[in-house]
Amino acid sequence: KPRLYSGMQPSADSLQAGNYIGALLQWRDMQASYDAFFSVVDLHAITVPQQPEELREKTRRTAAQYIAAGIEPSKSTLYVQSHVRAHAELAWILSTITGFGEAGRMTQFKDKSQRYGSDATSVGLFTYPVLMAADILLYQSELVPVGDDQKQHVELTRDLAERFNSRFGETFTVPMPVIQKDTARIYDLQNPTAKMSKSAESDAGVLWLLDDLAKSAKKIMRAVTDNEGSVHFDRENKPGVSNLLTIYAALTGRQVGSIEDEYAGRGYGDFKKGLAEVVVNEFGPVRERANELLSDPAELDRILAANAAKADAVADATLADVYDRIGLLRRV
Ligand code: ATP
Ligand code: MG
Image (cartoon, rainbow, N blue to C red; front, top):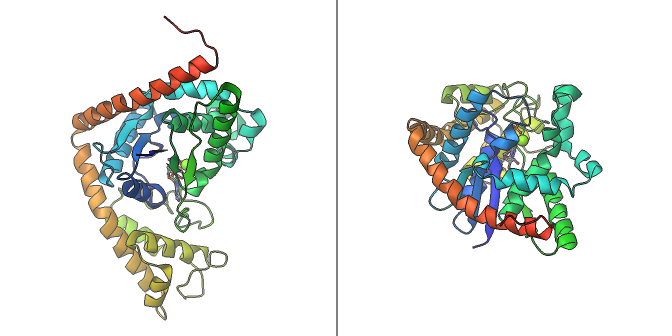
């Protein structure tokens, strides 16, 4: 089976609707046909200010949500990034073939560093995409399913793989991003031109996977729309309604057109009520299953340890090859 790699940061207690629609739903469907590696990327989460006790808890919670959403740790390799030391080691090697200007063009860095100011922005946030390249290349991954906010990072990964291969000989598989076009980006409910994010400054427009269901319904009812009162898709002029339509379609597997037809001549109130019901039906069982898994953290930790061992085996083989090729003296 072809290899597939993807991951999410444990940057909040709960994942958000964009993570679920833009990533988890694809992962779940792809795991049968691929040798999939799904990581909770805790080393990425420490590139911004964080609380150690909370990080541990968020890491478990993120893993639990993967499983609750249908990732099976017996079929896929579901592990915590820091458990596999090769990630940090390969990131160092790759940083030595990454151009400073090349890294400086990454828009995620520009967005996130703006929030923290230059003194609170770490070098780790700058080299984040290099660590992500290491994550992907360690497993000789062919496919990387991500939301389109991560497309630029996967392109950098491809460039680094090609550069390494041409300088030091064929070592890495050059990966392809997989981005589901219509649902690639879910926007903030209060600010529908900004992407929905776990680490948004305000959570008023973030739909959390594990939130109280009544609270999620309320957030949908309060979502920003427009004055037109007509339910149709127009990203340019109706970003709020278009975003709600995207979420509706993604969670029901329906076409946007059929949802527009259903709500023709009805107001936004009806439409939002309909969407709230869809969200509650979809997130409710995931939330329940996640909470069940979190009630036995020791068992969850055992699953993660066994999967980290599977990941180690593949990652160590790649790293040994890399060390040889760049001329590091072998320890005998
Ligand atoms: P953070 O704010 O901490 O960066 P995030 O919500 O952006 O968190 P990540 O952990 O960075 O989430 O990304 C996990 C996966 O979810 C990636 O594949 C990313 O492309 C996808 N993703 C994140 N936000 C969205 C979104 N709004 N729409 C679609 N996909 C998304
Ligand atoms: Mg992100």
